Length: 267
Image 1 (cartoon, rainbow, N blue to C red):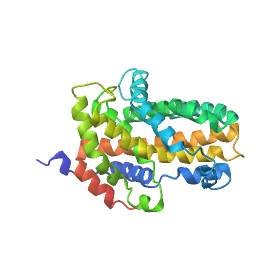
Image 2: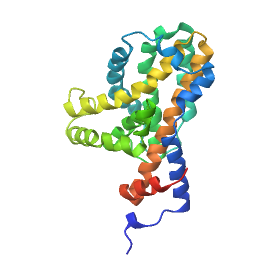
Image 3: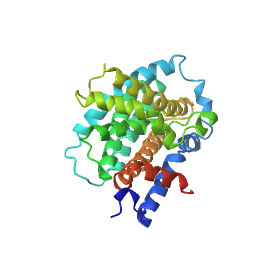
Image 4: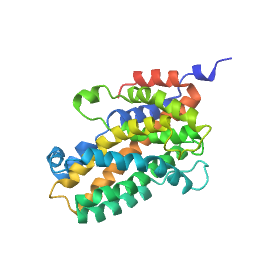
């Protein structure tokens, strides 16, 4: 009898995996934002406050776990259903329009709300792909998505393939899962959890900074602020869709088999 993890991929599953790889390996947030702003987002980096990274880092880490728990609790039951991507886009667009009208000063206030909605959308997508969002490992996988979208510099980009990032996070995820199996997700002081959140936040902040730099450009107003938030949400929805399609296939074919097939796919 053939082991389930040794069976051949169906054509449908191969197509799903290929689409997932396209989403995960070629995120294009900076390019899309540049199109909205009318120029490279680099123009806005010099306009950010000098203590920007420290301030955003503190707010991000504080928002991650609380945001995930709140997001999952507000979703109701855990049965598989179609994700409401449009609703989450609408919520962050509204926030972006309001923030864009005020300017960059509102960004740090807007960030916890946006992060919470992103996490809710990620969990919603996980559920739509057949994952039980009440399970600890799925909750941590939702957090992983926030680390997938920050490519950084060209040098960093070459080292930041999907499986490379998952490999880098693997020990931190495992340690946090082992600890939290006996605790609660909101136990923020736990060293394993602090390490995981800090690692994820450091990559998430790369994308946040790109978004903030775009909003710092003087020509960006309320309409552009909403458009940038739309692209920001869409970016992480695509990362989430790709991530949880991969993890759905892992349950069927096994992680090693999926990784090998994924790496062999030409996109």
